[in-house]
Length: 487
Image 1: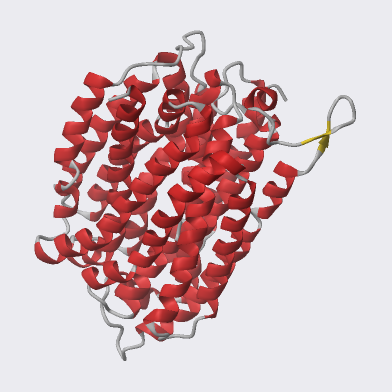
Image 2 (image 1 turned 90 degrees about the horizontal axis):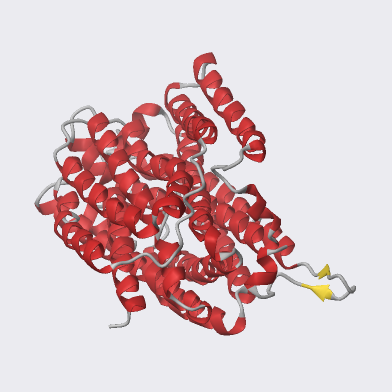
């Protein structure tokens, strides 16, 4: 077997496990809230956000460390940490302990995803990267499809702890395989250093803001929670100022001078803000508003992921041949159409009317993801691919975190707390008002997310606006990577 296919297979197992774990947890949230002692809606949201916030805050540093000490070495470590975190999650004794163990999983996921795309990019020639990244992402999404059914079956038969057991055996196998077969193709940049000041600002800043917003939404905003959010925003505002002065910055802001990179990165951020909370909202709709079982809710969510899987590899392969522009723009437009459609659905609409926007949104997400990421990675010079991969994953995770936070804040502000706790647990509200109470909050959330997704057209327009070359000729951002990298 050619080495590039060994790389693709191993990194695809990593994507499969990570996506599987994400959807399995989401589909099992109501059961966890009902059966795990002391678990609140806040804990439920942070079971998702805790994982993502550790990934987001560690990705850039781990991307830098990967450039310094080897991408494969840190990738292998990530598999081991992720597998150990899964075992700990299965033994959690309270909602708060499960949140902590999910954060350990998040560290393993960050080690994997800080290097996943970079390892693929190193192993494949430029004209095959879109297809390879597309396969990697689509198999990951296939894992999310399986998770919808598997999570429902496991949760209904063996209990929610079993959803973490499925990671242990394949995780151990893939860890050993990666250690034995993968090798470094990049040249380590050992003269670089870790940006301690940047890390001290970004992680706490993001954490303080999200913690204040989610607790405040549930308990009612007061000066303490407002101060927590304000402190987070101040730290995040100081972050770019420190990075511009750092000799070895955590985030290489110079990469944003490359129009292809900056346009792809910010459109990816806004797309993630729009899509990150979608699964949570739909799971709560099916299990909390309609009171479906975990298995039935998982089956009903399949059209979205299946549509993504169908569109992803095709758009990745075609973008290698025809360029990414058409696919990413069409993906954003279809995604916005899907979210606006959700916002207009009446309460209690038939399943066929719910499945239709799920399919459209899945096709849009599949058309956008692989071409956008491939063009982003192609736009940077090879020595910076580890940092670029980390920055791309960071922006995606930050977008997903903001999406979940926005969705939770809207729901908590429009649904009384007692009813919200029952809906999160999948228990009937007195009077049978689950659907009526939840529908207004769901419609408002979808309108906000649709607007944010549509804003992704702005960085795309910047990305492909013609610009003047040295001789006055129009020049665009689909030039060869070497030209973009020196922009």
